Image 1 (cartoon, rainbow, N blue to C red):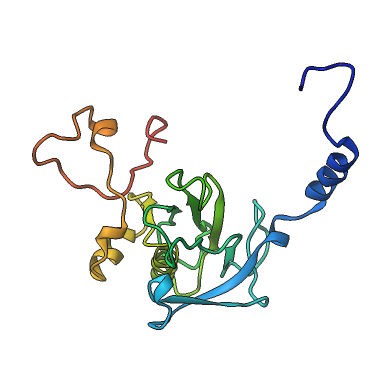
Image 2 (image 1 turned 180 degrees about the vertical axis):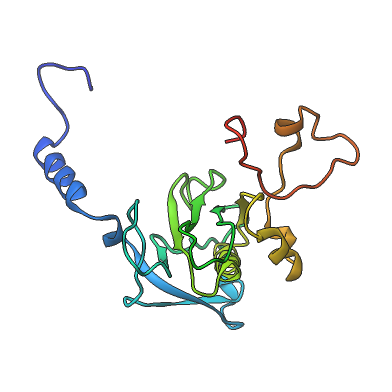
Length: 213
């Protein structure tokens, strides 16, 4: 049906109009800037709740030339519920932390929450649902707390992170939630079978060379 030269079964006028709408929209038009906070009553989201906060300044362009680098959590799609809870393994998180809490540092932390392919019919798959980009005044631990809240909010989503900068592992070790951090895949990095006895447990990924990246 795509190769036919004599006719087009698709509504071309409507498609052109929709394409124009998509191209004119900005990414932030589809999002909610939120403040996440711990709330024991929010059991469906593992004790994390949210408030819409339009006063926050979100960083959505690179390079960023603004002065406000506090950043904001951007929710593009709230967690999907199946049987009144966020299904396990439906979401994963990627985190690129920054190295030091210095006033002169220009690096920003980047956090992305994505759908996995585990529940394609009920949750969807391969879509970005939330982001946080910034360098908060309270430093790396503020980024880690945001990571923690996002993980809980999206059903204990596993966190994949660069481990040769920042202090993500130390933070989650301190709060006794190492279970939320993704482990390095033994087979890929060490060319050893994942069922080898006593493999070393390493959290995060050392993005130190092109091969690993």
